[in-house]
Image 1: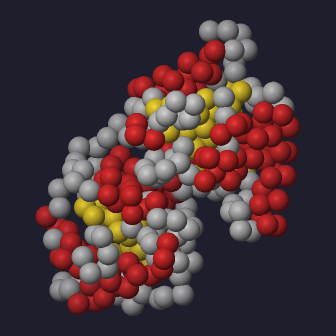
Image 2: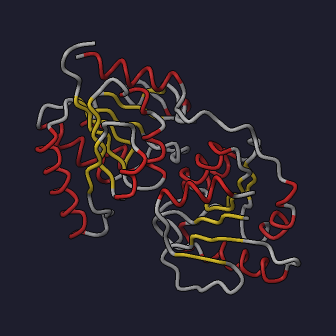
Image 3: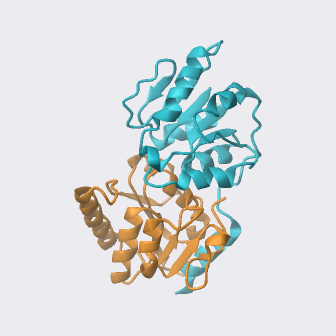
Length: 160
Length: 153
């Protein structure tokens, strides 16, 4: 099962259309579930819901063979925590997909990290989807922030 | 361990901000923990004893939504009376730190790891209300600005 997610806020049809077309033209038809956000686009070839609760989100991520997502940190951290390969495609502000271009820099920063695969735009996505089965996940990361960050916060809490 | 645990309010909007916030939870494992977020389902996966308070989701372009959010955040602060407030963003965290300072709380801002090139706009706005002011990217740290102590990764 491939788990697709566009996050809690906005639709991301530029990515969804490509995934839907890809699913429709691939044999055997891949099993895909997509959380598509407040979208007017209705996918034809994949199972989809506008929103899912965090509990279901975690279950679907845990059960997935691979995750395809916008370049949002919730999606990336979830995939890394469960040790799933993730394909990320950044939203763009000039296309009205986000209020700023922070996902472009997220994609840039995560490019080359084991287990994370970047589709810069919709033209790069189909080839990556074709190779999805071969993408290697990284070892799951710990469920917690780095010890340094935790210590800094804890020390501050205990200062008073 | 002291008799009275520190009351902490951990604030983040639903999605990536909340996922990041939760990864820091060992930092407040010894506290009386309250969360404030926008998704009720988060209550199903909190550490034992922690409570979730809810606020509507809004951004700065939604004037009515943002006013409701500010009121709701203020109300939660009056109810919980946190001694420490920590947030990763976004708007709800800004209001929590801003009102929290007035009520005498000590405040922590950890700017989202999604802001790799520059601090978030909210992060910039919240600066003067944050006692501990952190970025997750070493190259964004600067004297008099945010410090870097690590990241959620």
